Length: 483
Ligand code: FAD
Ligand code: 2HG
Ligand code: ZN
Image (cartoon, rainbow, N blue to C red; front, side, top):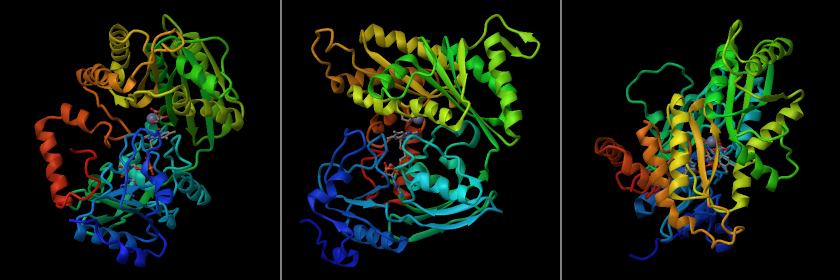
């Protein structure tokens, strides 16, 4: 069978169907430059009806569809394969805010809205949309929901899934399902919304979403603290939860090597504390009380952590932090966050790396790190672990960069060749500690086979049944999530 005739589709799309190689190129490579592919064309629909028409055309022609939002995904889910048979469906032009209801604390937006614009639309209505991640200036809400993105506020507000009340979806056959319900309670059968969230474009196309809004915090406190070990970081977490309760919104772990990489590649971002500590914690609270009370509470927390008290009047053997800085202005808070958010870019500037996005029960993190750090060093001497992430959620980006052998006169490392063995050490340990090999980035193509290796036959069969039921022709993002 020859390539499908695009004439009819091109006519109805009037310039929004790209086929020229120079025009399609940016859509065909992922953010890391790790995956690249080819496509029959790139379609840029403006409306849900447009999306439905494209999907119907694809279903009739048996053309695979690869949905794409901001193309910031880190698992290769939005990149087509090399066959050139798929249609890349960019949702970027579906970017209207449809409705805001401050009384119901809900906001309805189209899938291609950039996350930062969704946050702004909520602020304009005097409300907070709390999803926050380093890619928020480019990623889209459709992509966030399709990957069930996490980010830095999960501790308080939950993952994307918890922030979504309803969805509008174009099904794999090109029908429109309007599930834009703005309800907190709805027990009317199977939760289709939750099936589409996190399905990475393999079940249907998300075209709009109704999102949960929250009150804007009256005061935010941000601090950067030095800790001697992951164990001490967890002691600080327990203390912060006890003292701040639900006001604790972020608790991020950063190893000293991450700070070194940021300093090396972004010298304008200064190390916040003098000297070196094995680890640091970036923590934030969002209070509904005023500035003065929030400051007093946060200073109290840091004081107790430095003095070595687990609770007022209950001294412990050792302090859990060795030094700390509390941001005294919004600008200082932003610069502390900038260091955290530049780690991914700094690691990329340093060279190729192997990404891990693991979660284990929070209590197991110190034992997990001790075991895996030692095993990697034993098997791959000199390997450099770039360890950082959302410690409050038990989610670490335990990324691995090759040994600095180039500078030591060694031949450059073929990291690609080492990846399966390094993945095995890390992921086997994740399973041993009852964890997950993808906490927030999804499987895409990067972790598809890893997931199949570790999930039980029962779980894989159930997932295949869902795929077969919702996408019987197998045209939705084939080769992603499931093999
Ligand atoms: P894309 O990359 O375009 O697509 C991602 C997947 O979703 C693909 O499988 C695609 O087919 C599918 N998809 C996209 N839109 C739709 C749609 N409308 N309907 C159906 N399927 C769709 N992720 C986190 O979870 N937490 C973080 O803290 C975080 N930080 C990041 C920091 C940086 C610097 C970068 C580059 C990435 C980060 N990410 C993070 C990963 C990424 O930003 C998220 O996965 C994000 O949700 C992807 O959104 P996107 O619009 O770019 O999706
Ligand atoms: C983050 O938490 C992102 O900054 C990216 O999830 C993690 O680069 C990474 O591995
Ligand atoms: Zn992350």
